Amino acid sequence: MAETAEKTDPWDPAQYLRFAGHRLRPALDLLNRIDLERPETVTDLGCGAGNVTRWLAQRWPDAAVTGIDGSAAMLEKAAETLPEVCWRQADIAAWTPERPPQLIYSNAALHWLPDHAALFPKLAGDLAPGGVLAVQMPRNFGEPSHTAMADAARGGPWIDILEPMLKPAPVHEPDFYHRLLAPQVSAIDLWETTYIQVLEGDNPVAEWTKGTWLKPMLDALDGDRRSGFEAAYRARVAAAYPAGPDGRTLFPFKRLFIVAQR
Image (cartoon, rainbow, N blue to C red; front, side):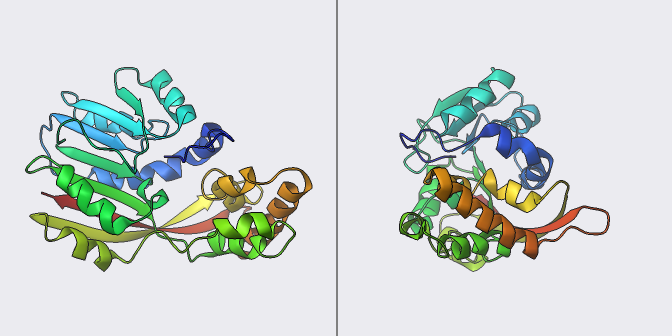
C-alpha cells in the first residue's frame, strides 16, 4: 500500500521485491492459520505487487479474489503476472467492500494507516457472517533499523523537511487489538514472531528499509540533502547490524499476527 502524491508513486516494486523471499514467509504463516474451506470472496487489502495474492488465488481457486492497493506501480506489476485476479487502485484507508467478503487478508499494509482504533473494528464489521480478518504487520519500529531514521533525520540540515514526517510507532501492543476486536468477533488469535533474517550484500538492512519505511523520506529530499541523509542513515545501520565472519548480516524482525473470525 502506498500513499498517493504527485511526487508520484512512492513505491519502487523492484527495490521492494529484492527481499521477496523474506517478505513472503510471514505472509504464508498468516495464510496457514486461516480456517476457511471455500470462501466465495477474498480481498487482499494492500496487495502490493501481488506476490501474496497469488497464494490466496491458489489456495481458493473458486473464490473471486480482488487485490486492492494505492500504488499504481505495484498494481501494474501484479496485473502482469496474475491477470485473472481483479486489481483495483484505491485508498485502502477509505476502502469499503461492495459486498461483505468472507476473507479480508492484509499482509504488511495496515501499519501505514493511522487510527487503528477505528480501522480494525470497521474492517471486522465489513466481513460476512463467519468471515475472517487476517492481518500481519511489522512491529519492529523500536529497533535500530527504524530508530536510526529519526536519529539521522534530526542530525543534519534536512531536519526541517524530515522531522514533520517522524511519527510514533504505528502498531500497538497485541492487547490493544484484542480489546478492539473481541466484542465483534466469535474467535480471535493473536501472536508475534521474530524472524532472524539472514541477509547478504553490502549494508543489506539499509537496502531493506529503502524499499519500505525509508523511501518516503528519501523522496522528500533531493540533491546533496538526499545523499547526505541517506549516507548518515546507512552509517548508523551498518554499525547496528554488522556483517558476520561469513559476510552475512542477521536482521531480527518482529511481526504481529491477527486472525479474527466474525
